[in-house]
Image 1 (cartoon, rainbow, N blue to C red):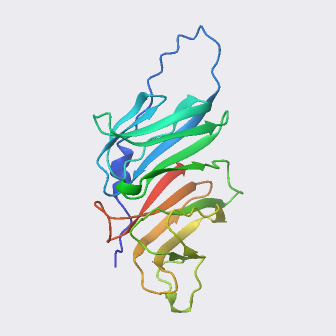
Image 2 (cartoon, rainbow, N blue to C red):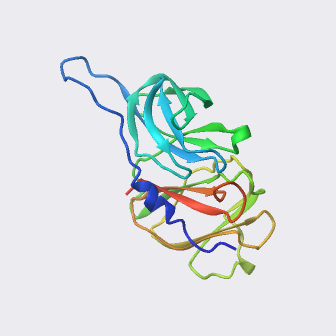
Image 3 (cartoon, rainbow, N blue to C red):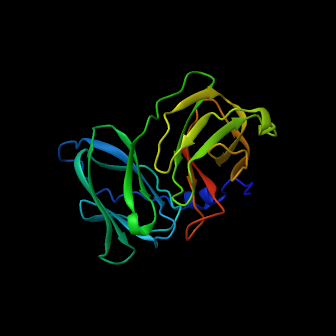
Length: 231
């Protein structure tokens, strides 16, 4: 049983990089979207992320999370290469709406790696609320149930908030009152906790994305990667 919330996100926050901006302020404005990248393939090496064949993010480690990057809207090509090489493991296109915000996750084990492109909702939650989205991103884990309770609540009499969430599934955003919660994840139909966030305080107006992930190399112990979408 893993009862710690990932401190790796704090380390990953040091990995915040933006595309070079060479605008000379003399040309027409370019319509843009905002894109964030997450490396969530547990047995893949560090990677370079390319947008339209230009390196936007070099040497991204497992569980590395970028800032939102400004990129031109429209049809864009994304490649993920083994860091420092021309070996491409993901080659995919995405149509990005002007002013849209997206999260692109390198997902799955290396032999089946694929991009998961999510449209983000970073608008303000209802006053006094937080907005949270859950993703099953642990390829070695079975379908799971997700419990969100007050800290220390006995799960024996609790019903899960989300049931039978399978790998790759992205739950709808949920709004809840700001406060202190505990997120626990169990195999579907079980009360055996395999991921435990511990006590988690969420403040009014915050937006978060929570991703269940494998340990580095794949498999247990599983953990929770919490992305700070909006503070």
